[in-house]
Image 1: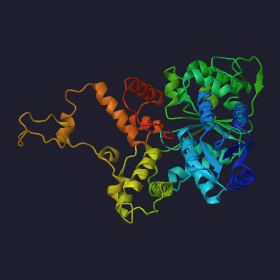
Image 2 (image 1 turned 180 degrees about the vertical axis):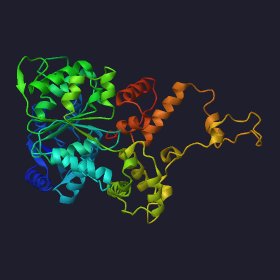
Image 3 (image 1 turned 30 degrees about the horizontal axis):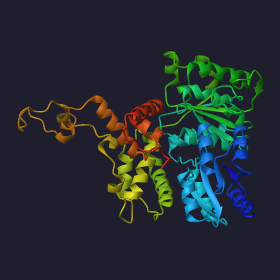
Image 4 (image 1 turned 45 degrees about the horizontal axis):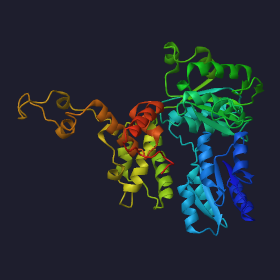
Length: 461
């Protein structure tokens, strides 16, 4: 984890830095927000910034947003009055840490803001085979393509390979090709010079340069526009990139890992993905099994998430009941580990017993994959009288409530309700709905323009 500390905090800044270093973080210090922005533009990446509350936090957060730099901000201060702390949160800081620093408090905040993404749980034989393969290829420089359904842990596996590689001391930089508009993705990858386009207020290094000496993860690479695919192919072949607005070729030193939840060979046949790029990325292919293919891991993963969310929400850790474990194993988990994670978050909050009970887990028929009965798939009786040839509808109200409503209205409610269920997490909601993150964002923008309330994105609450 990379920590950026911004501001003059007297002697306490070294103490906070030492605590972070002891927790395995890499620390850089910037005098003010201008220096911090300069460092970020020049590839000095960070996973979280601790900023002195006396700094212009609102201006810093806005600048990060304007320049599309994703960086959680934590405010901190010495003997700060409560109003300053509240103002910092209102201006965009995710947390406030009082100084002098308390080791456990700083550790907890850093853990909450930058959730550990390297835990690898896999005792099931199906997963053990995958982990052994990852261990064999990790020390090499080979490009890796990780495939699997949404929510199977492709980014976690990418980080695992990085930690096992010769580049483990270098940066691990991830970019989600599906979450960034096509017009901006090129700049994110290759960087730009000052004045290269409207809003380019200064030179900024791209992810290829930021990941120098380390690993670059291209998450959901199949969502990349074909024109940009050709530029990526050239970067891989020539091991060099050119910033937007410049003619200077820059040598790069990164190991590439790409992920996809699609059938890439099928995407190649359809002309959606370049065949030559596919061959370049598919040097080593690791396919992650769906959660239903590794049932032995479900109890351990569920308990891991239960403990994690108990700690985050300040409630006592509880074991999962036998009935709860049985229910979890019976589920189909179409959203895989990500769906299990959300389910256990809700279960921790809903549980009222000494053990997390099956009722708190609250699995639905959809999650359990229960097939509808033959009667439920037949046409309902017009008379509504049970008897020979008649049909009983288990929940007629659910069907009747849709009559008279447009498809657009039903779709809108489904999207907003799913997003609310996912606590505002756009990626999780898109996976559950079976649509791309780009489609989801476009829909939400339409709803906002129409004056409809949309759940805040995770991290914006």
